[in-house]
Image 1 (spheres, rainbow over the protein chains, first blue to last red):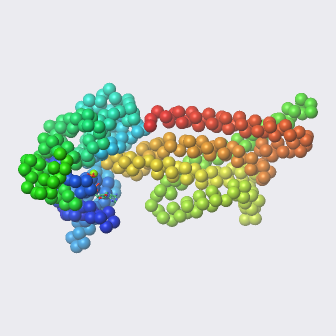
Image 2 (cartoon, protein in one colour; image 1 turned 90 degrees about the vertical axis):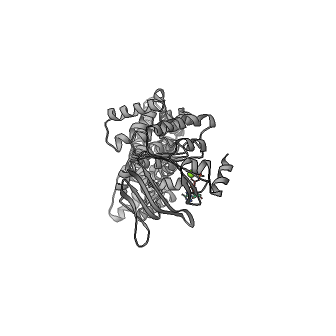
Length: 253
Length: 215
Ligand SMILES: Nc1ncnc2c1ncn2[C@@H]1O[C@H](COP(=O)(O)OP(=O)(O)OP(=O)(O)O)[C@@H](O)[C@H]1O
Ligand SMILES: [Mg+2]
């Protein structure tokens, strides 16, 4: 079953063509990693999926329902209403490089906020889900702490739990470990691996090549706003044919 | 001067403090919410609203408060709008201070990292939910120090109302000084202002502490 499908996605920032015709389809339970040099458009692509950026051209659909549909004449991406976008996009969980936790709310309040406000869950229901998630990411003891009291790795684990609290159908990760000290990366990757074992559908932008190789069903290499290569971790990361990937892999090593 | 007269004079000046505090409270109660509302208007995408609010803050921050008081109290009657000194003072102060608060809140809201909007949106929160639950509470913490500054300035600005015959602290003090030729009443007035500002400073210290539970 197809969860997300993207066709011919284009995005420009002024004169800069950041995405130049991206096509991607992700099946339920599939784990896709996106790798590529800095500035290649990985974040922009991810942000287009949940409308943090507005695409110029192309289509995006979620379970076959269009969020943006390519106009057959002009190729322009025509979006559904903002309200409809929101109701679709809250099925997409997103984890940011800089966590973006709500600093004025305790860990538990960070987790119950959206389920209560957006999904109209009662506090008891929301707290039940939140407590289970905190246990899962190993932070039950930090329930009442504030974000400033947490380490980077703990913050990111809370951010993952916060996204999961909305019971998303797909999780988007934008370099979830890039802002972390090396010794804190492991604990975050561990949580993502656990999700992978549960077959959570995920798209992960990462510079952690070993991690990508280990958990991905498919790896995508992006450069200059295009998908240059796509395949199993073996094909893309272990025996890359494309010279640009070879150069890139040598650089990150 | 007999003790009895001293008490009368002191009481008379203190009654001016009650009037000043009335203006003060009215200004705080109305201009802070107004400023918050106008700040959101200034950040909206509605251009006419934006220009209107730009003009408003420019006009009221760009002209002397004393001039505005004169206009409202002595000028508006020519247009058939007559206020008592107290109402004229309150109206002018609310509109004037709301202009300053608008700018303070605007800066406060704009200082919130765009990641907060993005996180809220990614969780499915709409604009009003995001503002109410995420952005405004965080801006509130950041605007407390500049609000405190304005709050201290405000009590001293109430002295300007003596120019439109409002019997506040300075006006009453002046009339006592000229009646009894005793300048010590100026010191008395100064002490009243100092006591009030001390209270205001303490209130804002408390608020800063209250919002200090997070960073
Ligand atoms: N809001 C924006 N306005 C203008 N240009 C932008 C904006 N966001 C991104 N860009 C530009 O678009 C290009 C792609 O950026 P993007 O963040 O998608 O790259 P990336 O592949 O995620 O890189 P990195 O690995 O460094 O995170 C970059 O050249 C960047 O400068
Ligand atoms: Mg990026």
